[in-house]
Amino acid sequence: MNVRCFDSPEQATAALAGRIADAIRDRPALVLGLPTGRTPISLYAELRRLHAAGALDFSRVSTFNLDEFVGLEASDAGSFRQYMERHLFRGVNLARERIHFLDGAATDPDTECARYENALDAAGGIDLQVLGIGVNGHIGFNEPGDSLISRTHRVTLADTTRRDNAAAFGGDAARVPAEALTIGMGAIMRASAVALVATGPEKASCIERMIRGPVTARLPASFLQLRRHVEVYLDRAAARRL
Ligand code: PGA
Image (cartoon, rainbow, N blue to C red):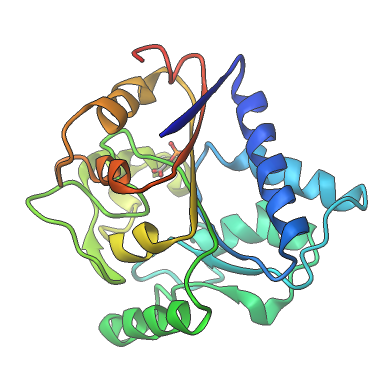
């Protein structure tokens, strides 16, 4: 893994924004895989800034978000779709028809997962997958367990994950949906490039295990060790155990 360590979280996400901007300039029709969470908020702010400065054109870019909560309409304030509208989509010139999202309110989640997997295939897979990491080592909502699932699937969220997502639900973990839809490990492992960002001291342990530990379904991000290239953007706090 190609690990880069920065003095501050903002420097780490600004460097990653620059990496994404370079990829879009090289390939204007880039297929970009996108995460949600606290960590990428400053990443998306920087991408909006680059776009507003006339330095970045999203008009031919396609995006695929990693995951969405089951049971939430796209218009629900707690949905990842609304997070993306607030932090990125409204601030850049993405074509609406090239924004791909799992529908958490789909009546048949299995059909919805198959639709998304087909859309990923039709796009030729992901060119650049941007990832965060959960404190439990999840990527997307591929949660730790006895095994991992390759395709887009429905998942029961770990308690730590519901706690970490409580802020968007009035701080109450019990109001965070118990399930989500997520792309699987297959689309992540097949992406042409992967860039993972982690900041803050609470990520130091999972980052150490991701890079130095065994490859295990108990820490899904450890599977990234099997890829030829992974770029890892860290601040000092997340890198302190390396
Ligand atoms: P966070 O989420 O950025 O809010 O820590 C990361 C993740 O769960 O992937």
